[in-house]
Length: 319
Image (cartoon, rainbow, N blue to C red; front, side, top):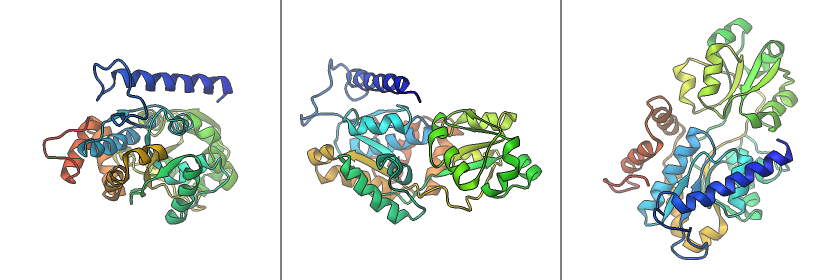
């Protein structure tokens, strides 16, 4: 992304956060956001611009609200290149993250995440600390990038693994989020690790309906989705085996500003960790399906799951 567009996007994100502080849930009728240092300041949980991230933001926010914290969710803020800097700069206080991707971003690519979940988490905690952030405990749930094709494409080119794409790639259009071009675990990695050169790249969306529709319509031949995407199973797509370990461990984890942890004490981190501890990959896939396939609101799905886990009272809903 050109520098001018990055600056503009960052400015719009800052404006969105400020506007939400005036009119967002949990602060209705207030003419201004509480000052950051006041005890009654609202904790803002931001999310990336894809459905699972929004759902996770409501899960963490709902648990915090049940414990008496004043909290609001700002969903769909954008990609990691916008959201994590907003976290580091104090525009938001918490972001649901993924260990491997967060490590690559916070370390500026100097520390390579691996498939070793424990090692990746240890490296992330150190990188987060240097950025003024605290990494909560990782969930058992993982959601990594998946390179997928339709069953017809897999049969036509005899595809089982990503390495099998070597001969087929020049005939295929690859689809994925716009930032895929510049990420080491997407196009750059597919070229460096697997030697893949696709016919062209088409920017679709971040693990969402546009990518699935483009695959169905034959507009793209291969795509990047997420392993917990319910559309993979419902459309009988084929996930190609990452036999050269391009994708790192991607456990769900809350990233929190250190100043927020210091302000609210250990109860805040304990509440977030309690949510993470109950999240498995299967659970996350199921919850995603309720949002993306059944069409339920993420707040509704989050409320039901939190109640079932006794993380919020029986009659309480996520704010």
